[in-house]
Length: 175
Length: 182
Image (cartoon, rainbow over the protein chains, first blue to last red):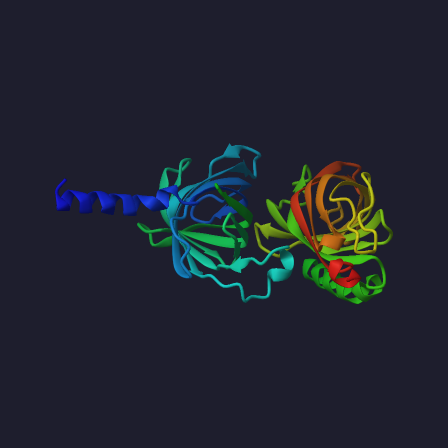
């Protein structure tokens, strides 16, 4: 086997190793959303998410996250208010924080910011969404997020399209 | 009026919390709440549940829970539920280094103080009957999760029955944990 081929195979193996790590997760959250651009629509319900976290970096740890929300609006109609896909970045990972009393074991504090492409199927509207998970705790196998607000911008109109909050979100990673 | 209720709730919680300190245990509650089937009185879509939980005996506890509106109009409306609850599957705490039952069920009754009445005045608005099918953890361990709590709420002003649904609540105990029984 030629040397370049071997190097290429080694590179592919190296790049694919994160896929075999403990990196895929699924999550459940409890969301509420209010559409502020256009006729008011309020909804709340369950959010389901998938996460791919290839690394465990101390600073700027990135993850790919996809979400779909399913709930009821103020008229008790079932709605899918948003689908999101984007990047979720842990700004820092530290065990030196004041929240350890809420867990039995030592848990890391990992405040995070997310940027997402968001699609509202009912209105066929695409928006750019920013989410802040400032109360996020992590262990190897889970994320635990509380009170994570998000805001969606309509880039064409240059206005805030909607906003909401995830009261709690639990994400578990496969072993 | 709503701000007054919120402020009153905070003051009451702060003032009464030392009274609980001599008892079995005291925990801080945080979780979710939804007020269903009374949208004409409370149009909330999402509420934050917060408060205090204290153990009075090994099987009885008293819970003060404030439900604060998040969606829509964050923090614009709150109610306070006062519930006396009993465990059905065993001791919640032994007041010793030996932990109580790890998985339990809670059944309780109480009242709600709110302005969710026909007249819109602040006062005792509902009589509550509550069932929490699953609790995981206990005070001695320092943390407890309460899952899928269902509370029937009889509205005294109009005779209607609403429903309070708490998906998940956490109790973080600051008194009565294993650290106190070392």
